[in-house]
Image 1: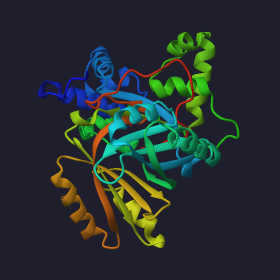
Image 2 (image 1 turned 90 degrees about the vertical axis):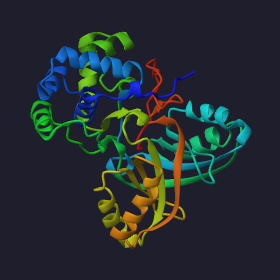
Image 3 (image 1 turned 120 degrees about the vertical axis):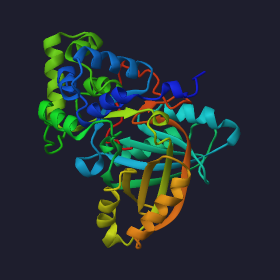
Image 4 (image 1 turned 180 degrees about the vertical axis):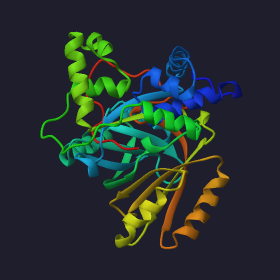
Length: 348
């Protein structure tokens, strides 16, 4: 039984600094992070071991979204028998193509973000896996047509400007994304990085039972391709922004891009997607309180009068986030590193 988050679990200044350092540069060396924070690298490594060990924070990796190189992504609303909700959520969450799974207020029992290499495979997952899961009564599928902002860009704000500058100077630049390859990426390496985005060559060699040189070469090739998003995430109840809310909104087709660009400048916004269906924008936010739902909606009405918010819900429980299964306290449970391809073209 997961324990509830207590005050003693709150992140301290070093926790927040280490987490943001890995949000900025998820595979930065401990030497680079330590230099940026002016903290001994051994201390930084030990702190991360504790944070990742208890599921407070984690680094994952996944192939990029549909507007950046291929794949198909859908927002899926799922109606479920209330008596079987948790059982159904656990069954659906076992599918590695289900990247995010939430229970929220409102009409839909569960909402998922599902990703696959192409539309046909995405359709198959929604029909063969989700619709047939025990307890499912109805499924509505809304395709993601454009990804404007995804949550890997959200920051916990634990670094000072000087620390951030030093980190960017010390950490290697992110790989340049090239044109998508016809072949799928190295599935075993992607699966290892999905479980732990900081996997080393030596760890990969042990995991796959191959030579260290071969493991490093395969790892370096996947990273250098630039088709993976590396992301450091953190258990939301520990962040100071414990409330997750979602807005579904509509704007004139010709104003979607400009509206999304404005939304993406607001610090509360974690994700902004264009979708099919009755509403063409899906907006996910992290807030300090439920009262901030109304405050933010009022702000959006002032700044973007052409944006019509048709629905707003508050997430009651996250079963899965950034491809990782979460416990009832919002912490990541240990990831399966035994194999299988991580969620392709994922967002959320």
